[in-house]
Length: 396
Image 1 (cartoon, one colour):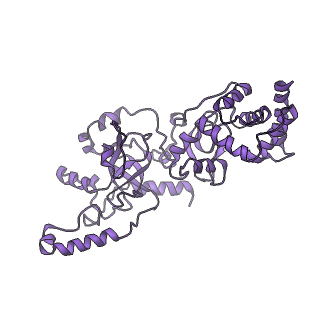
Image 2 (tube, helix red, strand yellow):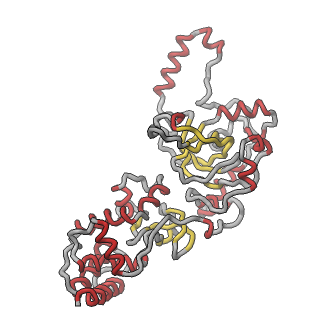
Image 3 (cartoon, one colour):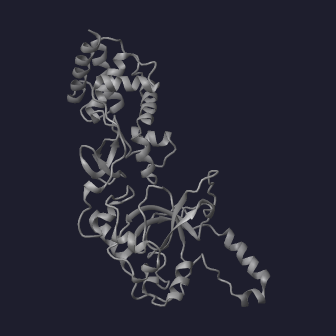
């Protein structure tokens, strides 16, 4: 089955509104399985069963992400999130929602098919609550399609995490969404920018690819030329023990990799290795593996971008938005790259034109490790020649 067919299969599963449900007899761990009659008969037995339930392992822990349909979106204070620590004086809210997970709640009565207002409200209240991991997500309305996980170490059953937004603005909302404050106005006047949480799955929901121009890029800065970039590196304070020849080599490689653009994205992820969906200043929208001045590749644990993620304590597979913001930050890049290249011995080349050329070639071969970058190959020779040329202008 192709990737596109698999995506469409997931969509069909997520948006098939379970017309032939099995009734409301499905097991929902968030709902009590004991009635007042049970409690009156044997409270001790109930306590014993509750203890056993507490000892039962969380079968959804570390499981894959699940497509889910938003039932009721709302803003929750930090105090509502188990284990969260709200900064003193902070009034920031956490995006949250009640959501229906078709693959897990197939046996439950589907709230989208219920016409009785009171019954529908009761049903919605019994579904799990999901809290956003990131503040960079789009707003949600009833019918929004999201991906969720139950990897909530504070509450394994009744709540989880909104991992990503698949489609924030649904094709249509249910009729009862008019009762949700602000939902109709938001739906009719949706912001024109697609949030960075969008996933590849969302491309197929409307039958046409998302307009790449609407997918925002990470914030970034650009240096005018090599001299300006070297000056910026020196000002960062991370390259104090680098010779000028080594700084020229770093700048030459940054020029070839990104044209000195801190938020550049490249190496499109055609093989689905876990890239990030964003917009590249030069290549437009897509899913990319490499980012920043030196195009740090994050589609592998041992690639420079993967090592960067580890150094920042970021999970490159599950915290993509956080990683995108971190890896395109100039200060983070300067700090990480200076440490890596210093350890590789690329920081003390002699301050001559030849030294700058040799450093530029070896930087490509050892640090960049790019295609045709080994000694004697095309990219190595190109960067070495560029290093010599810039070195002559610098030193002579």
